[in-house]
Length: 484
Image (cartoon, rainbow, N blue to C red; front, side, top):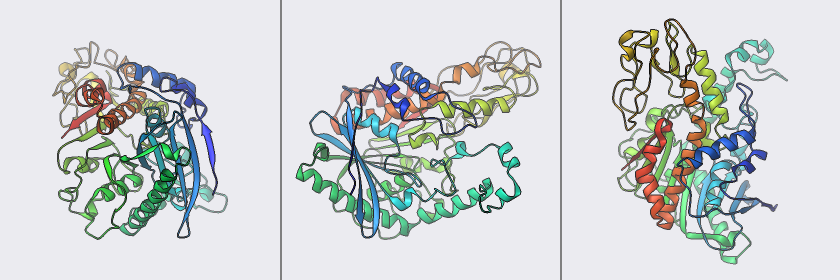
């Protein structure tokens, strides 16, 4: 067994301290330096994000536990100040180790929570050979140009060659179906229950840091594969017997990018036992790399579970990689801006024949000449883009249609945001308006999850006010908050 203690510094306002730990992972396109990202993220948080009653320094411990021949990586972070803190059990996704989800775990620890994470080492290493970037998602794939330049040897996956995109995708789908299978799920549940008993024993013995965890206020949280485990523990019906949970008594749950396999069927009734308060976080284009679950069905766990304390934070665009909790927002911003430029007219579409799109939604917002018929935003249920300017490239832009909870009108003279007069093509001011969207979405996860936790574990009135009343307005174009 190995034991590593790691002190960390200051509180929530000190996001810049994350800069030394988090770096951009991809050069296609390149994200800003980590310190710059931390500053921009903090600026967004300061502009209406949720702030807990206090922020605390924290420390961490990492261990390797052995169970039935399997090595389990575990990590615990908790405030340095002595006390009892509600426990969050965080379960990472395929290809991640127990230290994954760093942004979320450290944010919760600063807010006064003990966060225990566990991952079987075999699952953490499952994608090592085919996916150097462990977070999957469409935003992590290489550019098409890179793919075309790959040599025939590389494409064949020969010795010393890098697997092609098609080979990686094929392998991801194979591994995904293997690890998301019912047998694999049962094994993970058994390992989780065993690990919880070991955790409880350490708490009862008063071991350093472990003694800080308040097991009477336990929240389950998971991302992607981990989210599948969470909903199974809560009672999702997989039409087969699952290991019985006799030990963990959760009071609430947070699931990020939950996996909903339509092949399992029974979508409308499989979540009827999920009675606890729950925060579901997904995106309008939250597609996984395993071809198991799609954006259009991830919200089913919220929609078809019994009402009461159920929250859905639906972010705009392809945020599957972002929800892994390692990107402060700069990488997503860079990718969105590049896609918008490649679309031929900036973020929102422009005057002239190219048009464009707000790439975070993947929908056309304005057609030729700054006008044309637009499409509704995927997942938001109403149309934003109408006949902007009535087809006149020099008319008043303005996006018509319903507001879906967002009351602002977008557009202006000269073909609306992103377009110049006549046949022009430039960005206009749309790119400037949305270049901070990735930071806003990370701040949204910070704020919504912490407010939810404070509400359900600490009966915090401001946490309840923020998530019930303020979140929808503050989110603006970053997403929507729905409550049942």
